[in-house]
Image (cartoon, rainbow, N blue to C red):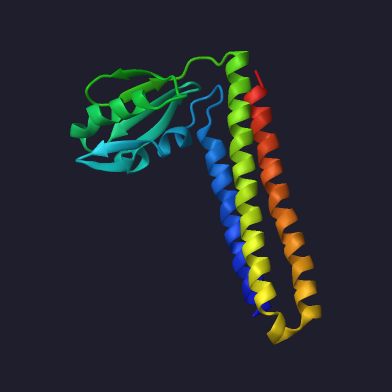
Length: 184
């Protein structure tokens, strides 16, 4: 029972770390990264659909991304969704077949703003991991009558180690992204 609680919590914390890394990838650096555009929601026949499901995304150059829709009739909707996305600042060119999104150079002030955004996302991920820890601790406390105080105490120590490991992973990803954003 204790191992079930710990393994389930570990799985959920790992998913939270992966989600944080995906969120970090959506914050743009000086280069065009297809992951920045993956989660942009496009109104496709009345349904919000992620751009990654509607088009192929390819790096054409360091700061240019080529977006090729699978359905040519969605070209205008995709262009509007990208244009309406805040904090992207992409210059769009539409030739009727593909969209070229060119990202401008980042200013130093803009880089610092992006670092703040990434730090906020990192803190949100840490809060998520801590919430998972709290839930697991409550589950372990509920098992005290069945397995004993010593086993629960050992499990809580292991839970703290698991939590620390996952928070360290988030911090490491945060440091890498921050260095990437501040590199000129």
